[in-house]
Amino acid sequence: VSFEEVMFMAQAVKRGSKYGLRMVDMPYMSFHLSAQQAVDNAAKYVSQGGAEVMKCEGNQHHAKYIEAIVRAGIPVQGHIGITPMRMPQLGGFFAQGKTAERAKELIDDAWAMVDAGCFSIMCEVTTSEVCEHLAATLPVPVVSLGAGNRAHGVHIIGSDLFHLYEAHTPRHSKIYVDLVPIIEKGLSDYRDDVRARKYPGTEHTVFMKEDELARFKQMMAGGRRK
Image 1: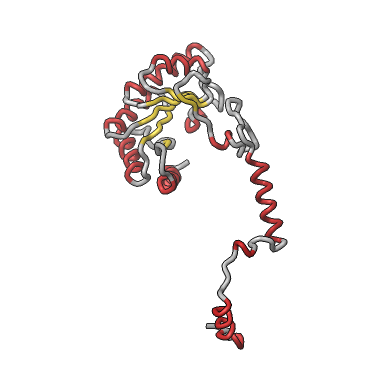
Image 2: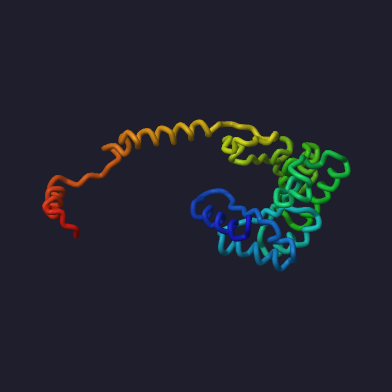
């Protein structure tokens, strides 16, 4: 997604939200080029998009730019493991941290982000052992997204939770309610009622008072248009 698309979504969330923390997931290459670029773009999401905190996908090589955002007064959550915006570098959507070497790299990435000032770390589809180790050793909360149940918190994608994307359900997700048949039935019932002129019904419709209707008909007598 582009910087502008994320800005549009951030502004929509701000208008509709009353509670919760408004977090912007900084898009690809929006904070990777320089400290100045990182601060400028994060500041725009705060001042124009109504965001309160940023989330930055990356590794230890991006820590210096994340630190610049934090030093500018904008909180950041670090994101390691499967980072969708860097999927080509990872070779696809595969769990991270299956080897000892890769697990150690993820630990180093998380610590670099914490040292840069991140207030939290999200582990997306890492092995449970990596996430558990971080939760036990880092001085900040660790959130699991498909990384086991040993973190301080657990995140799930809403479309997975409600089975809104039927083509694929990730292994780490659990469907709690299948909304697809419910939505399909609602749409079908709506279509049938419209075709049968059952909806809108009398209870859904506003009518003129009789005296006003009589005056209206008189005004429109003869087919005049005014």
